[in-house]
Amino acid sequence: MLDKAVKCIIELNGAEAIRPGDCYITNDPYYGGVTHLNDVVIALPVFVEGELVAWTASIAHWNDVGGRTPGSMAVDVSEIFQEGLRLPAVKLFEGGEPLASVFDIIAANSRLPDFVRGDLWAQVAASRKAQTRIVQLVETYGLEAYRAALADLFEEGERRGRAGLATLPNGTYRIEEEQDDGAVWKAAITMSDDRFVVDLTGNCEQRAAPYNTSRDGAVISAQMIFKALTDPTLFANAGSFRALEVITEPGSVFHATGTAPHGYYFETRIRLYDMLWQCMARAMPERLPAGHFASICGTVIAGRHPDTGRAFTMVEPQMGGWGATAERDGLDAMYSASHGETFNCPVEICEARYGIDVTYKRLNEAEEGRGRHSGGKGLSVSYRPRGNPVVSAGYSRNKQPVWSLEGGRPGGTNSLSVRRVDGRVENHAFVSGLVIAPGDEIVVRTANGGGWGAPDPR
Image 1 (cartoon, rainbow, N blue to C red):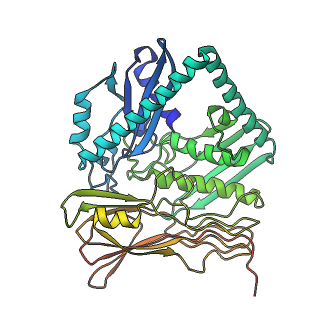
Image 2: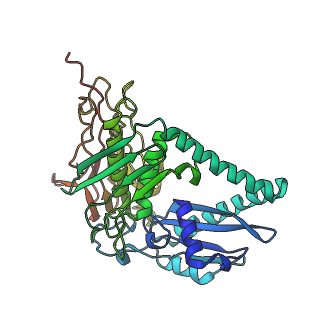
Image 3: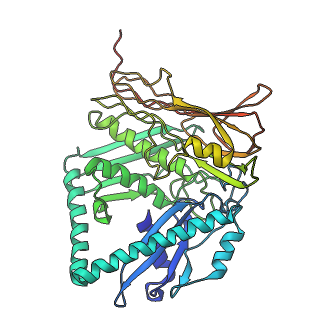
């Protein structure tokens, strides 16, 4: 997504206005942020001998950027204004000097100002380190060789993408899929000798709720399936996607406009990617695995440590089962596709830093996902906070089970429940502002992957 962010920064600020020592920040999906307000992009232009030769950029999820609820992940919002601080591709540094007013605005709009300052400066440091490496590269080999190498890399990306496209069966493949809320999404993928077209027209309108994604987000889902099918290697650049075309409709859930909120964009984007994956897997079942648990299962627990009183926000994505293939069982307890590079919180850190006891963390031993080759196992996790935190969470595939292939069994669903001290059990899919009392138990269960092939009748 970072190439999209940088292009928007250039478009909004004008290439002629960008100077050495400048640095930009954005988190708004309507200003190059692509995702949601918690994800902050910092981008730095790299100059060599007065010429702009590159950009360095990073994205990080900040634990709190204001908004209605601790952790900035509210479900009861109808506009992006309610989700937190918006940073519309503005300068963070000018001529190498920090703009103190911008730093102050950021800190004043977070419940965790020390954390966001740390995240901000870590990203600035990362950009500066990358800048140093690029400058060294250009000074070592010369600007002409550097630019020629970049052109070669883009051409190599395009060559790989088109070579992989040539191995795919020409034709148009369609899918319709019902979502947990009853909405029916659809897509058409048309493959020809030189184009891979993903058509997302005809889908539902954007919602006055945080379940929209930007057009850039929808393009990323299409890029992922295109890359997986044509060149599933670590090599990737803009050239890799020159044969890809994505068609969206402004005002739809896959191309939100105006002031629609985006807080749980990631569930919409991963569900889109999963649907495109299923479309291609039905067409080529020998080539792609069955479905996986297909949710970030983001679990945000925010409060104060019961011993120290220090404010915290734990952002905990969950792991689940991946689908079986024509050749083997699925993988156990993996992060979801389209997840990014967030990591789970180790049990010891969770208990020491946040005052949340982890009663157990184990594989899901449910029978779902059986097949000739069985889906990988999801997880079952129990949290017992010792304080009074607030929970926000987003679990899709909560009603519609993980899809299987060739007669395998579905992989089940994802769920989050709260078992109160008095014995009551509350089940949730999307929730925010949920107050937990000492002694309550938060129980997470993620789905197994889908099975491939009919199970052995024995």
